[in-house]
Image 1 (cartoon, one colour):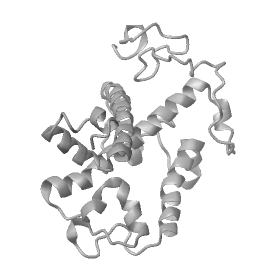
Image 2 (spheres, helix red, strand yellow):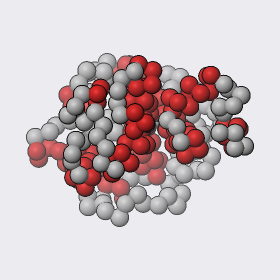
Image 3 (cartoon, helix red, strand yellow):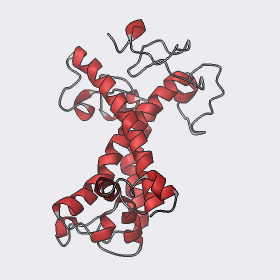
Length: 241
């Protein structure tokens, strides 16, 4: 196909490690990080099963790209949705605290954030910050540790998945059966990594905007559409806001 192998779309002359075997391989590795002799640091000193030590640089980087792409695709709409619901649709989500980076500060200050203005339907309610952190460690760290160890590590607890670490499949990770059709699976692999790259860049932009303007992504977009000459990166850099 035009996404894999020698016939794929390229942006340059690919180095030896980029052979068109994975989705999104456009032949671009300007720093040669995927080469086996690259001095790529180990990700973690905690590797009880030796999985990371067995992986080559390219395999590790591809796994990391997918992982961060998926998180970014969740983070971008997650950062924009509360602000959009409140600013554009008038849904009460806590005033200024609905902006994504202010939620933690509101929690530390003891303020209540009620979803849709419904008393009791809150962001973590009266739960302490340490308890929330512990819950996140278990709920997010647990599945990530299982992914890191490999899907075969789940078999002793009765979870059998048909795929591999990057694409585990099964009812848990593919409830709609999108990978059942081989052609659709290949197409979705490509879409995922391409949109994931866009999302990673977008979230960096959201973070940079928050630091520079102290506004959320929706407020910045609305401001730019209303007055592009004043609400842009150059105006902010020049102290125009």
